[in-house]
Length: 315
Length: 66
Image (cartoon, rainbow over all chains, first blue to last red; front, side, top):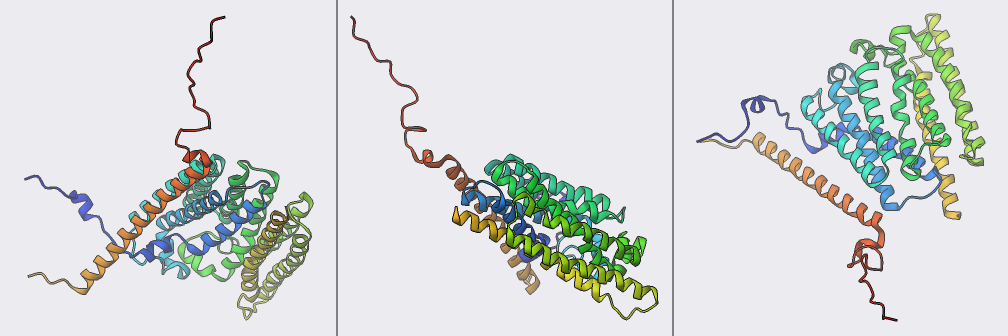
């Protein structure tokens, strides 16, 4: 009788037996929540309206697409993740999920999210989601991350696309205002991740990831943080001039921008202390900037979201 | 005789949960496409005679000879 079942090749393939929670962890839920939040802001701030059901479907597709790119990132970066303390507990380096499973999971979710967004909501939004996944997985994860200290400068674009996708889901197009939202996140990414890299430098060095502090040193990184912060702060105020942001947004962006700049300068001054051979600072300023940068981006988008929600309610 | 260990049971439970999650996800996908179709088609989706209020093909009317 002919044997019906798996080929020997399939039988030999390791199955790691992870549970549902492990697969959920592949989706990077914390990153996903930030992606959903910025996408909602893009949708609400966009001129025009979308049927609430289609809006929810669009957000779901964007969230799943972001999660899929996280899974593909964990598939490719399993070797790096196993070395770095911050990522050692992820399911693939822990052996609870095999790289093959992570790859399959990521690819299936990528296809489903792109198709769902394209067919049910907008082909432009679906195309942008496809490009975002491609950019994050191929351009950032596979290419830039291991080859240049500018990895997160260029790779930051992947994290900056979600508000533009949300905007396109409503309007079916890309406009200057959605480009401004993109640019705010794009310029925010380097100071945020370089602040993290300053106090996680050893981890990156052990893993062979050429982050700026590893390649160019702490002093250069601190200087670059100040430069990018000085570009980010005025850029974050531009929505006021295009009409995208109102008075509350203008006030918030100026005040928070001032705090951001002050913290960036504190990071730079910490470098002077370091130059004098004083290592007692323990990267306090860098840790403060890293924490505040998350609050900064969240509040900017929250105020924009609140302003536009009010406009919709009053219209 | 083979005795099922707690590891086997645990593994089977995880497999059941994975199958359930896949089933629920596929079910959700079907619902998403169904609801999106209804929303995009609007009220026309529930018309028994097809789209629009008038029949697509009307019978030619006979004109009375002059």
